[in-house]
Image (tube, rainbow, N blue to C red):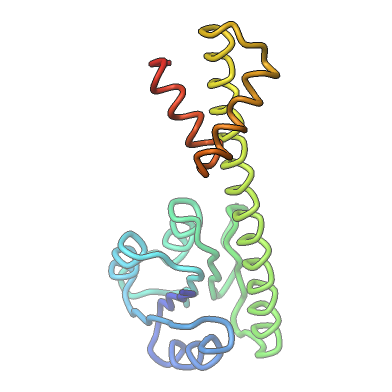
Length: 182
């Protein structure tokens, strides 16, 4: 579920909610205080955080930086000026913000998030394949060391066992490692 957290005045929150939902996000939550936003960041997953500075109880810039660095959330900060030394991944829009610029920024952020999601999924699949290859490799080494099979024979043994038992090679490799306590 794609969720946006809007932090700041109720007026800005209403405008942003109309812009974000349902066009870019399925749901948005609006909070007026930075402390509540910090609790929300730590207790839920968010796809976007939009902060309208200044906040009554918190440094908006610090909240934006924490959202990016601690929680890995794409964050847009509406501010009167770009803070000094701001190179930490927060997208800062200087007020007053033109509606066209805001629309363009939201479109770019949406496209960027889709690309990141695709890269994360590709990374997850690659890690799974690598883990599986390592597990099968360890099982082959155990078979070679314990049964005097060649590596090719061990590979064929694992493949044949997987076909015969209708189990993935990963599961066969785990069974071999368990059987030989390796």
